[in-house]
Amino acid sequence: MSQLENKVFDSKVTRRDLIKVFGASAVAATGLFGASKNAFAKSAPHVVVLGGGVGGSTFAKYLRFADPDVKITIIEQFPEYITCLRSNDVIVGYHTLDELTFNLDTIKSKYNVNVVIDKVIGADFDKRTVQTAKGHTLSYDKLVVSPGIDFKFEDYEGHSKELAETKIFHGYKAGPQTLALRQQLLSVPKGGTAIIAPPQNPFRCPPGPYERASFFAEYFQKHNPTAKVIVLDPKDRFTKDGPFKKAWERLYGYKTDNSLIEWVSGSEGGRVLSVDGDNLSVETMAGTFKADMINIIPNQRAGKLAQKLGLTDASGWCPIKRESMESQIQPGVYVLGDSSIADAMPKSGYSANSQAKVCARAVADTLRGNELGKAIYSNVCYSLAGENYGVSIAAIYEVRDGLIQPKGKSAGVSPITDKPAQPILEAVYQKNWQREFVKDVFS
Ligand SMILES: Cc1cc2nc3c(=O)[nH]c(=O)nc-3n(C[C@H](O)[C@H](O)[C@H](O)COP(=O)(O)OP(=O)(O)OC[C@H]3O[C@@H](n4cnc5c(N)ncnc54)[C@H](O)[C@@H]3O)c2cc1C
Image (cartoon, rainbow, N blue to C red):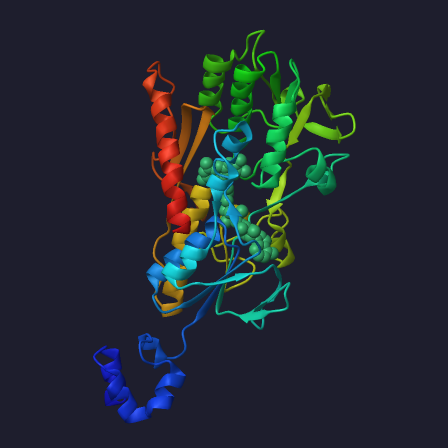
């Protein structure tokens, strides 16, 4: 290394010094002045992130914290991202979609991340390239994939993507689906019925269907008190079922003749077998249910992109190495968030965010040839059983016996107490957390 290069590394060099040695045009052409130390080093590695949602954006931001020099590109198909977080609130009118809409401008400008708005259509893992719908090919050194979920409409006779876009909305990717559900809810006639059919495990946001059922009941209580919501569930248990059912008893008369919510469990025949979009009815083991609106939240698998890239196994989800989130199928490729198999961690935004931070550290260490540290993850799922009634579940996770598992006694569900302030406080925590969380992801 020359004396001048050493001086650049010491950051004491001036433009005049550089021009003296290389000449003015050479300095201008290289853009050397003001560039990082890597201008003289081997060119910086390129980390490409597919999907700029919760997992992808958090990863890009935290990789920048871990490594100021690495080149980072996010490829995201949509210019705006609408969070599913608080989208149940939009259905009942507590929030608007505008309040849930974010973009990658801050990630780009503040954290020096290239943002490409384009759809990824393929990858060549041997050549380490990805291809986009607009015809671009990008090379990468490490690839990170966080494409969310896909729906298994085929699990329900009579259901299809088309029906889910016209009549039987899922509302599990926020946006037009959310507004369509709102429209349907507002149109339920006096004394009418709304059906919510949650999916089998595992699925995105395990408390989501039950928060939604609670909100529908609250909406009916205020605007249409003779209407009711029926939850047709393939399962016998659901996350936070204790605190949710207690809230339903306290707020909506659950288990009384006038209950605003009825929950039909899997062993009572709640699993939906088929749907008739024309007659707005579903068939279950417990018989046929007719309704004024039907919200089937279909069974799920990893996002289409993860399937297309061959990152899924027979379960439909992506197996990963627990210490780093690196794919077990493709070395050098990492899978985050809902698409990944993260054992005991629920498929939540909080989990995706926590996994992205562990992964950012692992990618930075791998690029530097450092040993990987111990992975510690965390999750809190806050939900509302009413506008001012919160319930939560939380855990810290470690890798034990090859699986991501709750650490020690860290796991817990909000207690059921007789103190009226307790669920009110949980609701306050939920709202504060969501406000701060989106800042951690997008700004
Ligand atoms: C009703 C509801 C409420 C929820 N509430 C909460 C909550 O309160 N707390 C919580 O922690 N979690 C909540 N979640 C869950 C949370 O939204 C998800 O777990 C989280 O978004 C997962 O992050 P992800 O990165 O895996 O996927 P996403 O955030 O969905 O990001 C995937 C991104 O990949 C992009 N993409 C996909 N394919 C391509 C392609 N081919 N090319 C380019 N881009 C592509 C998509 O456009 C998208 O932007 C909720 C979910 C729902 C449905």
